[in-house]
Image: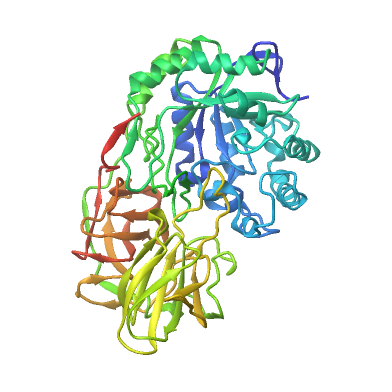
Amino acid sequence: MPALTVTDDGFLLHGKPFRIISGALHYFRTHPDQWADRLRKARLLGLNTVETYLPWNLHQPAPGALDLDGLLDLPRFLELAQAEGLRVVLRPGPYICAEWEGGGLPSWLTADPNIGLRSADPRFTGAVDAYFDLLLPPLAPFMAASGGPVIAVQVENEYGAYGDDTAYLAHLADALHKRGVEELLFTCDQADKEKLAAGSLPGVLATGTFGSRVEDSLQVLRAHQESGPLMCTEFWIGWFDHWGEPHHVRAPEDAAAALDALLSAGTSVNLYMFHGGTNFGFTNGANHDHTYTPGVTSYDYDAVLTECGDPSPKYAAFRDVIARHATVPDKPVPEPSPKLPPTEVALTASANFLVCAEFLSPAEHFTDPPTMERLGQAFGFVLYGTELPALGDHVLHFTGGVGDRAQVFVNGAPAGVVERERNEDSLHVRIPEYGARLDVLVENLGRANYGAHIGDAKGITGPVTLDGRPLEDWTCHGVPLNDLPTLPFRTTDTPVAGPSFHRGTFTVDTPADAYLALPGWTKGLAWINGFNLGRYWSRGPQRRLYVPAPVLRAGANELTLLELHAATSRVAWLMDEPDLGWTVRD
């Protein structure tokens, strides 16, 4: 019997009335050395539970593999939550959305266009079963049935917005049960009659997702499910950002009033997000409604805790609300973390990306340019090259488009950029000689995490033509940049012209949280001491990248940038304040 059970109007935990007051905290978006701090701040807010998704694509980077190390050490996270006295709600997907790369579906799976994603297609459910076979045994000790903190597990995620394959949902529920999960199962969908109907499973608790119109949303949820506890599994208190769009914020008093309405109605709630964190590395997702729009590196979400874990104005406002409905620890609001004083970093050494391609990966040869998935690569870049059999002015056409941003070079000189976001697929090129070298550097800016475009291919996604004639005989360098390679850096003071790597060192007395500012730089990625902080882009809105204190070390530290275009200086700064850009209120 599960530890958490339902009555006609609420939950019982070990037979006693229990209301879930939870906050979302994604372990994989927070440095592991900061998990304990974030969990303690959750309890001090008055939360009794934390909720987290599980990213399939990172936990299983290849079939048969399972990664539970570092940012992915979920057992350690669960241990820390239990030590803090918090219950845990797990949302293992397999699809999670979460504004996360591919919605958590691994690229090695979505590479097969014939698989029916998120359906009862045995090729998909078979892959899920194999993943659960590896994932669930290490988590068994943390289930409430074994004395652990996990009290509930979600089946899929907002499935009613995608499909209505009840057999698929039933397979997932059965797969969890067969692998020893005895805890309460639930589904969640947007508070919409049709979506709730499509995404629910008979005998499984249905919950809702919404951020406003509390009374109306609860009425829709109650109309769908006549009895049982009402729960808002995602109470949206902020929102996420895309490159080129404003940073979203929500007034604390508005969000607090909606939270009070929820709790006054006797509803259980999960704040989305309590702490958003960061899309480190290449992990941001993308949306694709009318056009493709990739997410930024920060997942601050205008949450209760800021990206660096400091209490935002919502912390005190929400704490006051929760105190009217539950017991809140008699402790002061936590203080902000120490910040590194402003520190200048001179990037004095460089290595040209195109010149040192062989240092990045061995060349492979193809008649037609392969997709990133065909190369067996999930993230990063692919560098394609071939000869141009003409001279003069011509039209280069990517017949299948690009996934997602292609920089084109002729004999090493920039010829232009083709962007999926702008629905571009052609470029005018001027070729100076017969046999000129064409290089195309394609960046995966993040796979769609929602809707019909989940699983879209990356890299060059179809034949390339010059004035309608196919270009063939390509060399390809897959550049996933899982780790920084050893590169032939040379000290230089020449102007920054990309794509190139740039390196500099700086000294820290006492490690503390910081923000990497790159005024004058254009677009690329940043690493400190080999830790990939994520993407920067002058397009904004985000202007600075969060640097967790544990990434730094006392003494000498190293900053590496991959600048894809150009910069007006060779200097970067570590600052003591964030800059998430211009704002719009939701």
